[in-house]
Image (cartoon, rainbow, N blue to C red; front, side, top):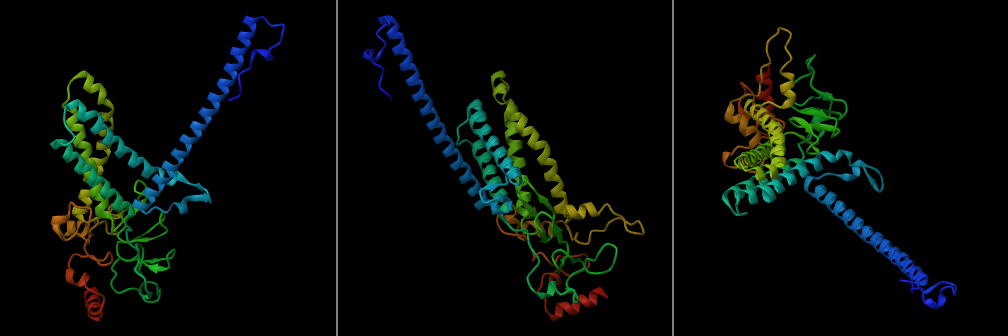
Length: 356
């Protein structure tokens, strides 16, 4: 800070009261400059910590969701965040819902953090986050490596599906390989995905054979958490409580109205052993105007096992995986042991006998 202007340096013609005013003005200007400099330094420090927080959050998302941020960069230091905004939006909604429950509903209802309702809600939130992370970071499945799927002159013997307008095997020109049954090319991932359901931008991943269970559990637990928060908040009747929780009710109503129908739709798909792509194809009629006959509908229990796993004890948990290998699937009129066995000479003979 510069020294304050002394009276000796003032012009001799100024009166004492005028000299005092000049000194006050000089001190005010110097003090204001110091305050501005300190404010700039504080803002720079805050901006630095915000940048560090953003970088740490991006690294956390990359670690948990297996998101390669380098794929979305336009330059060495300029990430393209538009493709990651949906994932960040979902995480933000979950944070808002959790904050509304802990900081708005619990105090208004007079409940402790370790109350029964709180423990149930926290369990749903934990399972939601675990399912979301598993669905986002798990690879949905790819064509196996090896010449069997990439030799165009020799189609794999354990495939049944053919091209829609011909009887030729399904050859993917972009991947230069044969597509297994129920597999489709994903434009977002740039490759074939096993038992592809759809590409979900909210996950930053494609829902397929290996992560369909986690996606379904994410829908289930998110719907349960939103419904629990919404129904409990509706029981509070006072005007002040209604005012405090009006934002919570609006958020939960919006999420529930979207998630519950989507969850019920995917429940129906799993019970029917259908993917979203197959569901869209089921509207198409054959040449003789017969309705679509799903060849993979082998009963409710086996249909659910095909997605959630063979043991009902772990259907609820975001661990484990589906039955099979993502290439062979049980079909109507075809023994399950044959489809889930290894590809050996006996399998090839049985396949040719059943196909004739």
